[in-house]
Length: 479
Image (cartoon, rainbow, N blue to C red; front, side, top):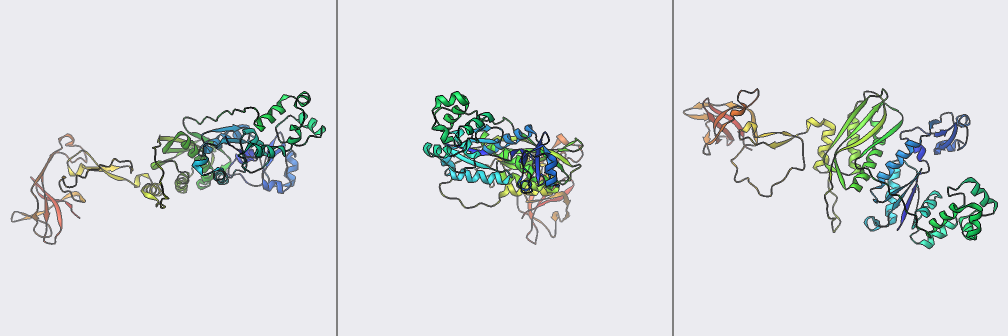
């Protein structure tokens, strides 16, 4: 097995998206986490809040919230599902990913690490990482910032031996005793007689060492991906412009993409719930032209919608909920490298709907009615329409491409219909009748009895005309 440990050293602060810089978290009146700009101004952990504000008057201060940090770590676990289905939480600020079974899929551990780092940068999370055969060994190396892959046990143990004894999360009295003994590196600790050391510092640190070195098993509790996706994120300040919500929304969609990968699902529609500062809520529905699981596509569509959205009040929190999901169909990868495809019809439809409104983009579909006015109707664009392999073009009666909104009465000369000249009939009569079921309804075609013909005028134009008890009518034109 190969464990990739991801340590997020600034997770308590970076769990708040859209925060200003410099910024810091405080707990019980003392600073517990700062960003880079605050650190450069001299603000550090353990300082009183008054001291920190004296050093950086523009410092944005937030109260630490353990629930918010746990939610952010769970969101990152969902996001990590795109790399491996075996994810474990190492609270409060780390994840463990078992990537030994995914190396061939991604092309090696280095490729996975590169993708992980890119994903964290997009979400603005600071990251330190390490990969090793044992979960605790990988976690200690990640917390120490040893960004390296140690696939062999011997290499991992050599790297662990150089770590300071202050790195593990051991009690302060244990660390003080080890320092008093002159043991400052884990390698020094390993060289001591275990029995005597256990009597002096207890069993827990020695058991941790054995787990990290791979001498005793260290089973991990797997993160359980939820059955349905609903994830909320709290904003550090009120947001008055919709476009400013794109970054926070991107974090939610990153988690959704990982969740879809693990559950082998595609999402067709989802809803972004907005909580305003007056405690009211509003919804931004997002519907895709076809089921999808592409984060870039999600982010692009979200920006399109936010660009047109007018907030009725400032927003304090977001919540993304997957409404309609479908099973992901299996597909074989291409044997050879495929050419880069264009944007595609589905993405084009999504862009048009986002920019023009959902009601402005519609498609035509056939209806079970032989009356020409009722044979087609509007419907939502759907790329999942079944396609028949057998063509019936040659069997169906001819129909014009352009049907007039209402039949146009034609004059009659010497018993022949007249439209820009006398019309010559080119086909036999096709009788279309009935429709008694909607007779008398407002806007309905009603009961019809018509004889349709394909006709041609002296200019060579082809028309679709009919005759009923009221005379001749033009109803459509052929291309």
